[in-house]
Image (cartoon, rainbow, N blue to C red):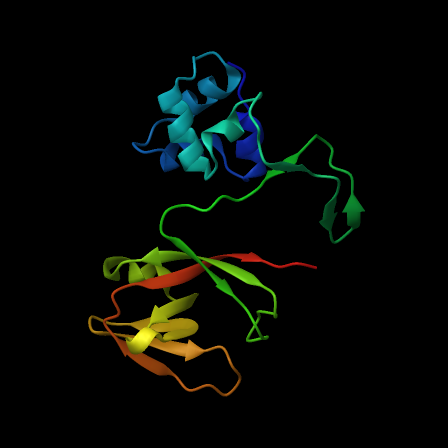
Length: 187
């Protein structure tokens, strides 16, 4: 089977070691390299493990698959827009379990009307991973609070609203929070 593991890994900006560590259970960079080059046969199990580590569907790793990708036409940097030296692709993001979305109806903070925010839900033991990040916090009666998580202790979270002049809010033990992980903005 011809795979596109290397192509997708590079499009994600990951090294062999990054992918190996993200696999569940973790493996070695050497094993991932052998699976990429075809010196080791890729089973369905390996394909699923590597796809999960890369954040794509297994079909995106198979050369004949109906992959969702965009061809990179140029790379933009301080020197302007340049054609890529090698063929490159961008693999379209796919939602994973536990993700929710926010729609921005009016500009607030760094976000503009029409933006979509993809958020990863976190349980209480993982709240520390969201420090200094934008989070959605559930409140009683179907309300929510959206802002920057600036502090956390055993019993409460301190959220700074994104609006200019907003006052810090304190929330006691929410059942979950969602941390913004991806911004989708139309031009």
